[in-house]
Length: 381
Image (tube, rainbow, N blue to C red; front, top):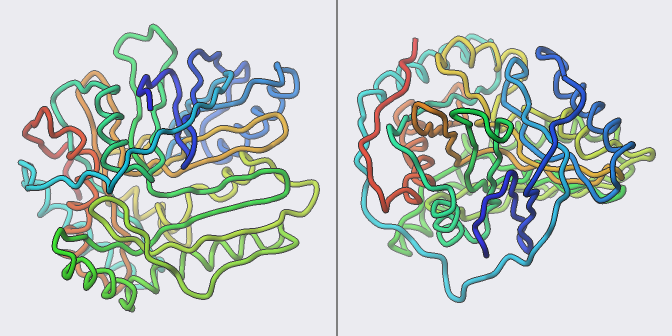
């Protein structure tokens, strides 16, 4: 594949989608509660009057107090080339400043106490690392493609062209929030994670342990049950397997449940569905408002676009949105990496810390050709 990131890029299993030049949406969407729904309405209005070959593309942030980065552009699709043989597997540890890890463990312990007190059923708690350096998006996407050939690669320019210190978001997400084509809907939620191993015997044991873990299965069931609750009124048919399956994603195993549905007509657009589901319990928690409150209390650095969405929608309402995980956000201060873990009342803070270490490796492996010492960008209360 050509790794020109363009203004906006998103890969599917078969294609590389690009919008090389874009125009900001003519409608300014107010921030705050309801921003995502207002953005979906604005996108639909814009597309009704636009060239039918154009789409709304961009990224939604995690929090509605952060502006969405949306634009109108013509999307082109080229085949995504597959390399023969298994994907490359990186080796060796990374040099990471671990001073922020104790603070994260403390934050998880606080979250566990609040969950046991009944404040929420689940909360996803993230931490941040900052690299004091620039990155080459073309080279980074190329290596991500080699390391994660089944992931959804993405690149989004977060500011208009020519903006001084323009920011960008890029990464390799393992998780599809949704794809809508006509009245057909597909989702692939992930929840429940374990580290992989180069030794095949240990790797298989880790997979089996994940598939049988009471905690990880309960975390996954919370996510799937919430999606079932939200989607059921919108669908004439909703197929959800009884048990999750295992999915390998780089250095990690995940539990995943492929969901397939047929929407009632008139079917909501892909963007409207994304606005309804986001932030999903896999990146926020349950109940959503209670989990969001805990996140605000325990994470001192805003997530910005980590845990948000990257995607597109067209004038017919079709489109695709993936969860912005395993990603880096560039800005004038350097590059920020995020990783999070789903916390339940029975969570072990040290095990959740280990999960975030493993999640950081997706981007750290892609940046290995130019190693750097990392430092925590923020402390936890």
